[in-house]
Length: 287
Length: 271
Image 1 (cartoon, one colour):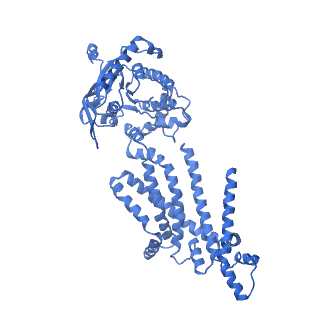
Image 2 (image 1 turned 30 degrees about the vertical axis):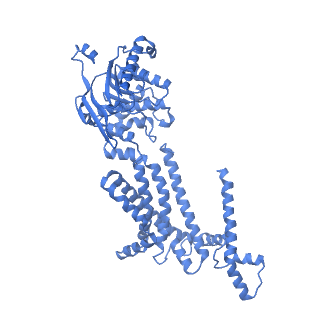
């Protein structure tokens, strides 16, 4: 742990340095514009100070984003429509529901593919085709169609999450359920084991390392799905709504703070799965 | 096989456990048919310890797998306990030990031995009694709650033998079970296996690459040769049932080993 502190800090410092320099470069034209209009003369110092504190900068400086996040998480009440925690929760709930549905669908399809020859021959091409369609194109359709049959709110967003997250689970679980070698399968045959005994006692436990790897990818995809799902609903609530509203009104600081919040959320969720993976595989003697 | 005729008198006691008559097995591959077994006939009697020895591709493992219903002959006839291998498998007539121990890393040693018992639907109390009995048989008592990775390769293979013994099948089919172990461990396990065979009175079919191992363990040695896989010699061992490790230096032992080696060489020259 300790050895990784220095390299990580170095990289973070590097990112901040590039970020601040880029902010000067990108926001300078606007600063010059303002100065020409007011007739002020910009010294290097006043130029830098201006580029790092504009209200609607092309690229907000890190401390501006930090201040915005602080303001909208700690200082706002969670129930407020301006609270980033509130919006994160809206996105998180859709992410988790979609992740659950996607994992369930993915495992079910994988079991079908492994145990049913017809499904083995036919399902995979469709699964792959489903992922070649841009999610941005299909998301509004899902929202509109589900809305027409009276389903709105959390579920449509979760469906889009599911659409993105079942894919890695199918691929990983097909591989995982097929991971027992010929000898292990023969061994089960010598005991005259039934297909269900073979599944629960051999195939499923063997697939665990593959499942967890897939779940990490699926979780990140779920979050993306939930955010994309929030865009066509008219930006009512959620991190996606914050992104959209921010871009309508040129609130770049708001956009960046929502982006960073989404990244933190994804990192936390994936880390949580990583923890579950370590604990489970260690207990199973497979780590 | 000539020797078998000499011992015919006690017909009543002799019971053929595995009987193969003119067994053929041809695999269809892209390079044309491969004759894994051709015209293989053999009788294994109750309580015998039979070794199969020969170079790779001689069909010794395939023959064992035919007995276990893991491979299906394309010609001839084979019975196990008087019934077809498929029926014998369904009635759990044999325990099979593979070259790799194949223990599940997520189960303890006791859990691994319990696995076939769970599958076969034994009661919990019966399971526990059987686990401790077979662990005792392979001298692994006290290791119930260890995980496979905590055991050496030899101990893992003993656990896998215990697992094959747990459901009281009369036949033990072993496919190079000690092939991956070093010489010293192997000697020790051979000695233990003989004791176990004596105590449990199982019929054992044992595939091996090693001449000393085959001669040391067996009451009957079946020498096979490849392309097509066939039996070239069947040797009834003159060695006594009681076999300390140093029996391997006696003239009788060396004579049998010599005959096995000759058989293997003869099979080789045929090519």
